Length: 282
Length: 161
Image (cartoon, rainbow over all chains, first blue to last red; front, side, top):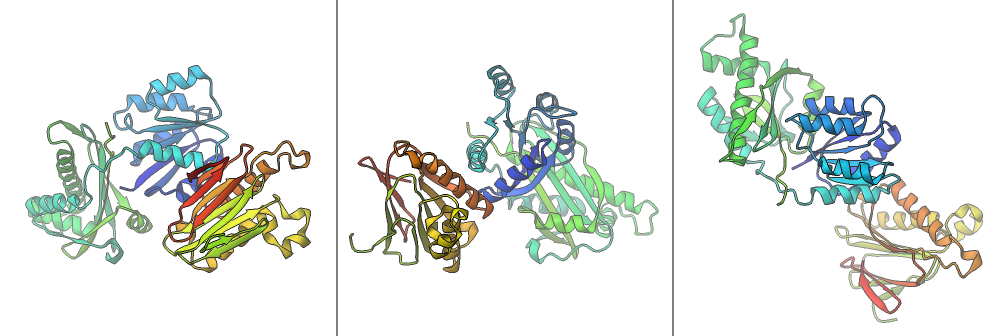
């Protein structure tokens, strides 16, 4: 599964160097996010699915230690592994942060190869928790049972671009299994699915809102099923889904992501991305 | 020299697509060796460069780019790319760059050779897969073109890099 990585450092130079190293290393990469201090990093973590964080300690606004403390208290973020990349190396500080769950510590200055090696080391024990194709089954079951529609899995490269307004519903879940699912679809399809479920017609003044709610509910049920497949015997908490409008260029960027999956539903393109925190080898 | 061995001398580089061939370079002291292998394209190349930067003698560098690490590494990269190797598939290994402090004028040449080579590779978007550098021993490198297996011999010991 492609990894999304967040780089947190107040130095543009360091962030650019780490980003270049990650792109050159043999890492299955999704997106690279950047933040210049702990506060910005927490904002990214609240909005984006991140698999791994590389963070400095001494930064303005919010330092890395406070960022780690905040992450620890937030169930959305508490299990995201963090590699500290800092010029700091005082034994007490290192020990304190390692006890707070820091996965590894790299001392500046570092070579690109050191950064590559520590990322590969931290992620080497990760096992994919679910085959990406299992999503086909889950989405198929949800749409067929709940919305009377059939998704046909389609190669993302062959998926046509969505026309008109696009909606995107995202949900995160944590607990026994942690992950996110995001479904993007044209508003016209969302309204159509709402019409299937509720029997409303297109002229309904609340059609768009119903469409958005429907997409949110579909992502909600799909996430519940995915979480249960990962951890059949333990409870997972689903956070409320968030439905937003998606810009057309964001559709293309999302489609280009590794791990993005395409479907055709009632002749409309649908784009699904999902992340599951890889299980750590015990 | 045995059959299939292609010896790369001091201030030389060689590239090959012959899977039965082994590129060999002897006596890497403070000199630095760069072994490149693209398993997909079946291309290998080996450099034995002596001095770090060509700007000390641009004339000589034009005549013999492999004398200097900067021009030599660039020439070797161009050589393997010309035979179909690609950046994404290249496996780069670095050998040598020993610190032979007993020779006054050689002092820190090894470290400088190493630093310049790292810079050229980084600029070219290539991370080093493995290295055997530093110390005070002379090294001999064997690079099997077919498999990419890289063998280093020094102080009577043989190891795969």
